[in-house]
Length: 295
Image 1 (tube, rainbow, N blue to C red):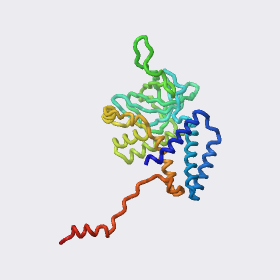
Image 2: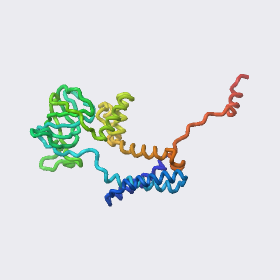
Image 3: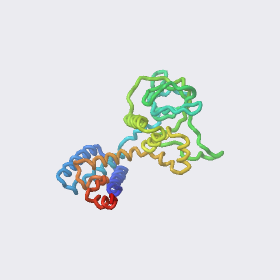
Image 4: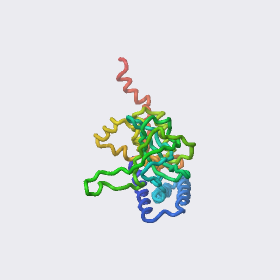
């Protein structure tokens, strides 16, 4: 089943390489829509070579356009070490461990005396005390102490590892749970809505441990996994399976297979799904019945 995807992967990789050399132009979306219409028309007329070439070019355009898409995860901006009141959206379920509760927050602003100042980023709040009931998607305001964690280093030498990350500085947020305030609901980013929808469906349909493992494989969510299961993954040397999210790969593969499996595409372009076995005919069972029947 992997052989039909090799040309698609090669053209998608070529499109990404082209995007790194030449920025994608503004007309690439229109060109993709027009090319998709031509592919459908060629498939309806049973022109397999033209339809196949069109699909490959369309995948290459998708790789070229992917380079120009903005990163949906916001970079950390507007946050500095110190005592601040951050406002944002709860991005996952609170997770209690001993006296503290870890609360993931998608930062939208910082409260000040003159009003709210814009800020962005993702923080994992460490709150002490009983946390009021909050759900993923709620907007809250929390008073926390932000500090920049210091990496390990030998005396008189530079610290190990990079000093920052691509998304901005990493900050440690510690506060009291009684400082959590509910805010009126607002708009939620599309990627967070998708993650919350996946989380709700998995929680409703799967057992806790199986659902947590499925979320780790699908969207890279590892916070809900039991500590014993995380320790087993580390001991087996396969923890990277949970660290690398397959969500983007799943979206692309699902879209390609759904499109190629539709009725508008010829059989040569459809994925080779295995066909169910056909039931045996009565004539083929006759020898068995004669051998195993009563004397």
